Structure formats: C-alpha cells, structure tokens
Image (cartoon, rainbow, N blue to C red; front, side, top):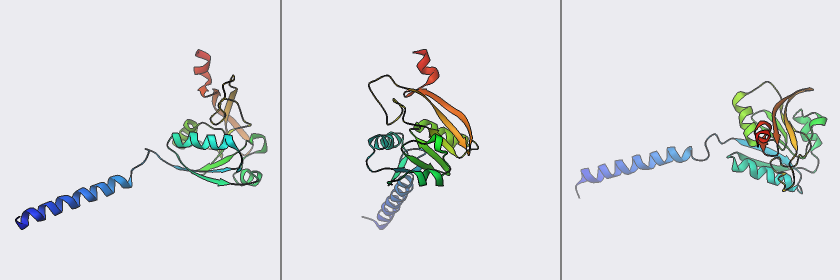
Length: 165
C-alpha cells in the first residue's frame, strides 16, 4: 500500500478520534447541571425526589446528614419553609419537593432570591406520588423572610391545568 494512502488513512483516523473526543466531552443530557441534595439516610421520599431530578437530566450528588437544620440554616431557608430535604444548585437553595421544571425555570430566569421551597410534604408532589387525591401546593420563591408564589400545582400538574381537567 502506498505511503500516501497510509498517511491519508492515519490523518482521517486522527480526525475521527479527535472529533469523537470533542463530542463525547459534551455528551450527556442537554443543560445537565449538578445539584447537591442533602437528605437523611432513611427517607424514601427524598430518594424518590432524587430519582425525579435524575429523570429530568440533572446530575445529582447526594450527601446524607442526620440533622438537616444546620444545612437549611447555612443556605438561608426560613424555618416555616422547611421540608425533609434541602439542595443547592448554582447558588440557590432548593427546599422540599420542588418540581425539576421549576428548578430549570429558576436557573433560566435567575430571579432575585435565595431559593425555592415546597414546604411540608404535599401528596402528589415529585417524590410524594400517591394513588390518593393529590394536594394543592405552591412553590415559594424566598429571599430571607420575603416570599412570593413561583408556581402552583395540584399533584404533578400545574394548578391551571389541573383545574381544566
């Protein structure tokens, strides 16, 4: 085989490998971001919420803690907005069963605030799925003691969509 053919094949192979390296370097879900979730080791609904985030394409890092109060305090989550798990993503606190779509909206819109919370553990929220009637709940945008409704749901459906059913 002539040397120029071998050289051309070698150059083509190099270009193919280099192109693959570039593509695989950006592989993974589009807009994948890492969220750090703090949860107690025994909480099943927290684990279900983590799976909800992973299905949405978020890269989830889990840190187990026995006491969540110090984590909430360090991220500025007011006590009245507490739930069973706390997360942090890109400088925002995420408290409780916040839908992944609202986390993505938060990161896209970047409103002034410390984070989002779904206080308590509403039935039908992500990680709290149930065959029973779901609860209506709000996702709260908070900044210190200031709070506003970021989104409203009935179970997994936005409140307006649930009302139209």
